[in-house]
Image (cartoon, rainbow, N blue to C red; front, side, top):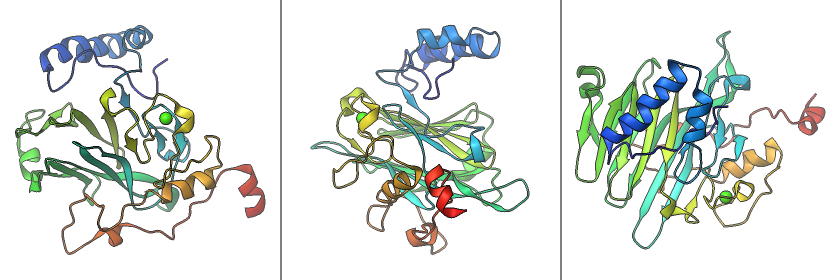
Length: 290
Ligand SMILES: [Ca+2]
């Protein structure tokens, strides 16, 4: 079975691109696209030490995002606004990865209770930063790298030829996916565009074990202790959707912590709706709702 959390790469996409192409990209294509040996590919590229994380998957119920923590805990969170996915603060590394959500539009044109990812932003201690956002038409992305608007360049260059390189940040387009590497700290993000929403894979080195905070969890190889509030207290792993919702709200971005790029005179509060409460699918809550 293909794991929801993706697979281990033999070679780092940015540091050993040629080996990565040969060992990971081509092999995956051969096993999973051109033949039925995908199980074999994932046996040889297991999830584990330095793996890809998918905080969402396609085709889920309501089409809503299922978050997946760095330790592989899956949960649903339908908060509306801007949230801290990953925060690292050590003596020599500062990194923040944040996500923006909007309500999904249902087939009949009405708004769903479920929210989807429409923007991601990140910044590290070298002040390298990215901001990727779905445009209003939901058919393309707006991209900022180190505060520079790269949207036009991204659209003008030929397919898969987009490259933005600095000594601490690289952005490549590869098969429609933006691969962003924060070179100083070794974190890579892969941001893809799907049906009216964005997806994210985060590749986090093991050196950050036990020091990550945020909605992607505390990264200590234990998926059952991942709901840690900003104040360090913990929510039990089998909490209800409603409890998880309020846990998630605790990870809301604020004006000073935001790493998003705002234009048109907008600010964090224009994108965050702290009063929005989705309908919860838990039986307990349903029984009191209906
Ligand atoms: Ca954990």
